[in-house]
Length: 348
Image 1 (cartoon, rainbow, N blue to C red):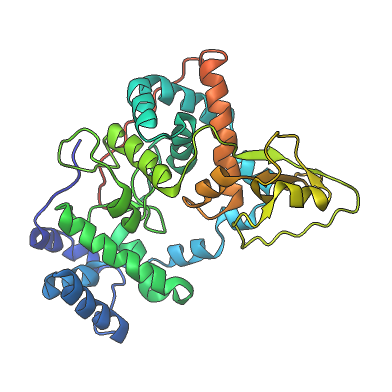
Image 2 (image 1 turned 60 degrees about the vertical axis):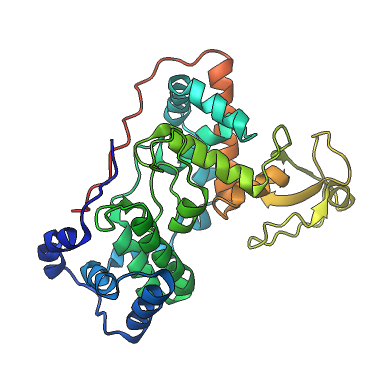
């Protein structure tokens, strides 16, 4: 299964009819004209081709709406958890592990990464490659770069990275699909992460995050290895809060600014046996019945480098534990094999 690699000008012609019937970007807009000039100069790209690509891009209002209400920010933990820690996703994760056991465990050992967390990332992100997104990546990134002021700086950089990625890997930038934020493939890498962390694990000359499971597994493992994952180190623990304890949680902070001893001095304890000077972070884990708390450690922080949401990191942790238990104690119940990851096709 190969990624689409079509001549750029031919692709632009084939997309012309679609572009004519949808709202396209005015490449004369000052910020778009400046982007074209900057990318052409900085990355050695053909200015006419960059302009033509942006003219073919389509603004997507649905993307702007989705950016305003991401589930990991608006749903309480107990509700967010219900979307990811399901019997089906656990069983499919165990089946994925069984089907890719040799590659998964070999690559995990190579990168000093815990295999259950590789599986959990793929489960949370795309249901093991089943749901990789239907938006054209070009449309998503252009919409967010030029029509979403709150994060236009970040997405302008990602749009540039995407164009460079397509050029470097001879990919068709009008055929690649992904999430509403422009994340791609089974592990949902943003373009900058794709360029930095994706791995050609089988030496075929491609870093294919849609259709090559060895590449996918190695790329996730490499991401976590580079982020500082510590094999065997703790990730998360339940917290016991004494009556009247001082609770201070900044939802924007993910840094480990306190130690276990400092938390204990505030009346917040965990039964996990770790040294008193272990760096830690108090996390809100709301239950339907009321407030609840957990304590995250270094590896929890590493998971948030993948997605900067404590709820996301907790979902990855719980799915990893459930899949590992299902895989080893007892053996996984047979489940339908995950649907193979399809090569990207242009969005309808």
